[in-house]
Length: 134
Image (cartoon, rainbow, N blue to C red; front, side, top):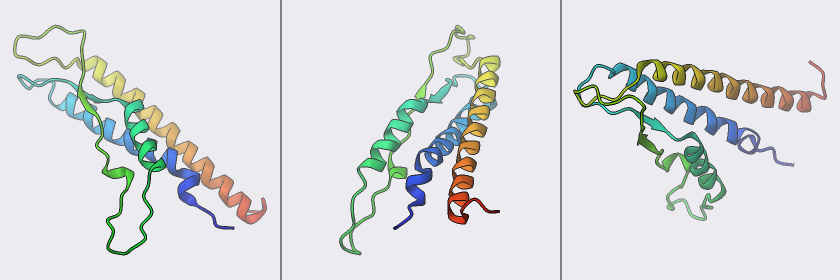
């Protein structure tokens, strides 16, 4: 029986990747909080996961070495401008620093949770391989 690590961890691995990308976007928002004309951006996590899952379900089978490989990582992530509650500050910047900090912390906690899910998957896999013995 073949064991597929990709099947075991694919969803959580993609979640970690999307969370990592989202942290970079939010960090970019915080870094540009004083940049005139900068607009806050964000990644829609649900859309990004839907795209990643769609790509996973529709992987192509290569029947020849010359065929190009298709992977879900080639799918673009949806980076969008975020609508904010803060009115324009006069210089075109709409970054709300406190909101960005909260979103960064929330995303960080969810990132940690995804890592713990992945860790649990690997521990369960190891336990299955060893028959529960350490």
